[in-house]
Length: 407
Image 1 (cartoon, helix red, strand yellow):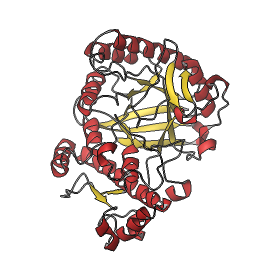
Image 2 (cartoon, helix red, strand yellow):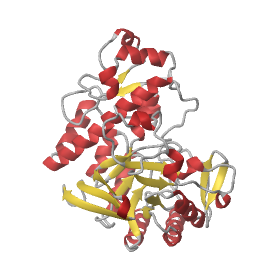
Image 3 (cartoon, helix red, strand yellow):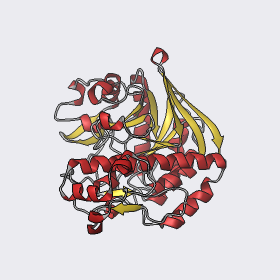
C-alpha cells in the first residue's frame, strides 16, 4: 500500500491549493480523492443515521472515511484486545481511504490526562492508557490506510497555552510517540499531529521536527480546544515550516465558514461532522458558496412547516428533496421517527458535498478568496455557529445523550 499526494494547483504561496490524494493498493486497485475535500465522519465506524443501503443511493461522496479508535475501546485492556479488520467490522466501502485517529474530532470536553509513556483516552470503559506500541498493534490489526499518531494534546486554559513547561513537554512527548508509532506501524501511512498550541516557539519546534522525518506521510492540525481565530493562526504558523508536498487534515473545521478559512490557509481535508450536527437539530442545510441566498438552514421543527409541501430546500436534487417535502419531515420530527434524521442526513451531506465541489471549482477559477468573502457577507458571521448555537431542540428523534462538539 502506498499513499501519494499531488498538488496540482496553488492559489498563492502558503494559501489554498488543489490536489489529488491517492492510495495505491497494488492488485486491489487504487482510490483517488480530489482536494480540498472532507473525510466522512463516523460513530463506531458508521456514518450517523446512514446504513450502506441508503448511502448507496446518495450522490457520490468522497471515498474517504474518518474513524476514531476511542469508539472501540471498552473495559478490556488495549494490549489484550483482539481487533477485527475495520472494513469487515463496520462495512466501510472497500475502496474508501480510511483514516484511523485516536480521538473523535467533535469532542473537546476531555478529562483524560496523559503521562510520559501513554496518552489518556476517555472511553465508554473509562480512562484508557494508550501507549504508542499498543496503538501500533491496533493499527496493524484494524488495517486502515492512514493512522494518526497519538499525541499529548493540550486542553488547559490560558496562560499555560502560551508559555511554561506544559507546552514544551507536550511537544517532546508527541515527537517521541511519533517515532515509536513510525517504528511499530507496518502497513498504514502515518500522519503526524502538529503540536505547540499558542506558543510560537513550540509550534516552530514541532513543525521542524515533523518536517525532518521522512516517514511522515501527512500532517494533522488538531487544536479544537482553541477559538477559531487561534486555530487558524496556529495552522498558518506551522504550515509555513512543513513539507508543502504532503496533505494536511484539520480537525474541528467542518462548519462551512471555518472550512473556507481553513482551505484558504492551505488545509486539504476536514471532516463532515457539521452535517451531522445540523441533522441532530432537525435543520436542513440551505447554504451555497455561490448565488444570492441568505438563509443558511431551514428549521423543519417550525409549526408552519406542517402545511408546506415544497422540497426541504428549493432546487435541491438530493434524494430527500426529490421524494419528500417539508410537511412530511415536520411530521417525522414531531413523531420522533428515526426516518427524520435519515432523510436529513442524506440532504445535509448532499449540501456539504456540493459546497466542497463548488469550492474546488472556485479554486480552479482563481476566485475562492472573493467567493469566500461574499459567502460570509451573505450569511453573516453567526450563521454557522457550533452545535450549542444550533441547538433549537433539546435532542433529535434518535439522540438520547447530547455530545457537545466544542467547549
